[in-house]
Length: 390
Image (tube, rainbow, N blue to C red; front, side, top):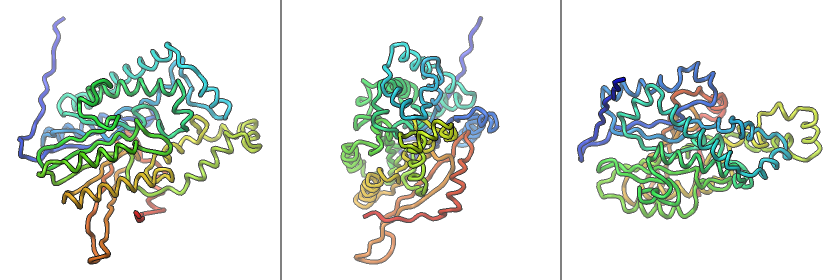
């Protein structure tokens, strides 16, 4: 049979012209029913391609969750591994060894899912005609990775899942390998990247997953390296854009402590927990690895109690960059399935009242997922969010 090969073109701006680029996030769904209802990711990518045809894009930046790999726990060996609802079940999973058969199942899943997902109609056409640059978030690994207990994150099976996810993320999204990461411009022991888009814009993509724990988003030395690199930007740079998976500026949801308490009641060893497990009440709370399913999303946020100091360190550093180098700084993020914006500003009280430097944060909606219900409630509960950084 004669084979045919499609031809694609891509566009590169001239050296002194500004780049025309797009930002996307959450390129998938966790629920097939939602994908059917929304038409899947191709609906939005067809719109991107139409805009690209009218005014060519030079780059598409992925802010994380380019693929939803949560079904890694649905195979014959890993099936329901994440569905622990009691402390005893969680302990059993922590102690489970990683077998070679499990490793093969993980690798086969990630390879097959990437091939299927990246072959989606309009998305594949966009990949072929618009250069891509991405960072990752939890769903590129599995839902909530990095925001579970240290014991779970260090367990043999979860480390195996992460290793497989990392290898295929580097291959499909970054076109590199672990051995080549540093030579390909990544820094900080993970996949952080700083690239120049023409003469005027610097794009910093933070890897907020590889080194994440309940108590840190990225390792402390990364901030020192970021500061060093940003201070050495070309003099022509006038705009620094920082990409994070989860929004750095976002209203704090007043339910984190409540959900932690619920989790201890349904998965602990106290009398109430034991009673809820024996009566089946615990099964009424959607849980993953013995905690309420939404708790990992709240622990992910920069304004979670354990991440607030790190958030403030990042923002102080960026404000200093803006002031010292006289550049504009913007934040881009996704994750929360709703578009939004925020701003951070400093007021110089020593000389004159007014805004001295400000950072604007833009937040992308998602190509296929529905708005999250609790976000709609936040709009009513807290339309304006103001806090101070000491």
